[in-house]
Every structure is written in C-alpha cells, then in structure tokens.
Image 1 (cartoon, rainbow, N blue to C red):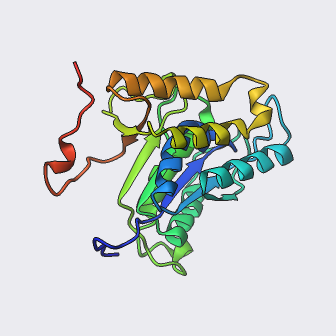
Image 2: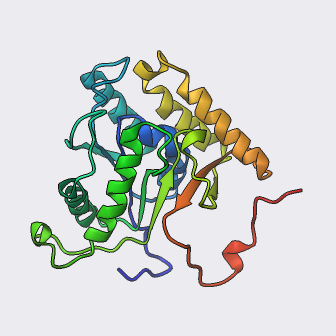
Length: 243
C-alpha cells in the first residue's frame, strides 16, 4: 500500500501470550496510537487458564474491557494453551494468516529473551517467523489470502529480565497525562491479576524510570527486529542523552 501525506496510519497488530500481556507491556504506546487515529487489533493466544488468580472466563472479560479502554479490537485464538505453548510451524502459519487478514504496517510481540515466562519468548519467536511466512506467495495453507509484508516488528518487554541486552531500544514518549491515565485504567481492568501483584504500579514505575533517564516524564521501550530506515536525519534529531 502506497501511503500519501493524507493516508490514515496503517493498522497496528499486537500479539500477547496471555490476556494481560499487551496492556502491561505496551499499553501506553497503544493508548497513544489509537488517540492519534491508528487502528489497533489485539490477538491473545490463551485465556490465562493456568494463572494463580482469575478464571479463563474472568480473564477474557478483563482483556475485552482493557482493549475497549485502549480503543483496540481483540480476538482470542487457541494454540497449545497457557504454559503449554510450543514452537510449531503450524502455529506460525496460523499467525501468518492473521497477518494477511489484518494487513498491519507495524506489529508488536513479546521479546524473545528467555528469562521470562516461556510462553512469552516462544510467542515472540512464532510471531517473528509468521511475519516472514505472511509474505511468501507459495505457502499453500494460505493461498486464499494475499501475501502481506509488514513495515516493522517491534518487541515489548514485560519486565527488566526480558529486556534484550543486544538490541538498542526505541523510546516512545508517552508522557501525556491522558495517555498515562488511559493506560493505567486498562491495566487495572485486569482485577484478578492485581491480587497476585500490583502490576500496574510496577509497569508505571518502569515507564517513569525509562522516561526520567531520557529527560521525559514517562516512556516505554520497544526493540526493533530489523534496522530502522528513515528518509532523512530529521526524525533522528531527538535522543535520550540529556546529560
């Protein structure tokens, strides 16, 4: 799709292994993008059935409410189930079919760093594979859907342990109070998970630290799968180095 200055932003497709992953890992960015007019769609690959708190039905409802607060649409798919996800070609092909259907310009997935819930890095790996399969015209399982090449895949980290050490992050400034408030409300919609730990406070604290390190009030990190390409130096004039 050829974009013009008046073209709407291409859709953003975000994948999560569990009903709360996208909100906790990239919810501030999602809130900012939907406010700017970008269409965002969530794909959740389990219903949190092995979680310490919350039933699958409750967690599904919480995720639906959170997506609505963030201005996103959401769907749930079945792979191997919570805490049982395996890396299989069939799963990557299934995800590639979703990519062809949604036709995103940008995609988000959990990082592939292994010091985290195994479903997270395995899903990140499957999504990375799926982005390649989605553009292969000869894949017989997907011939009913036109091939689609995305613009960029970014990984989000759900905690310090899952932040890659070999990829320079991109900082997204989410300092606007209304963005932070929307993000916090979406995280707090996962009431069942707040019984385990105050994840909303944890993620907000991380975002404040990332922001303060860059001279901002609040920021979230994304890790690009591929080198970023720009038409000029103009977008690169802002950096995190403030001292």
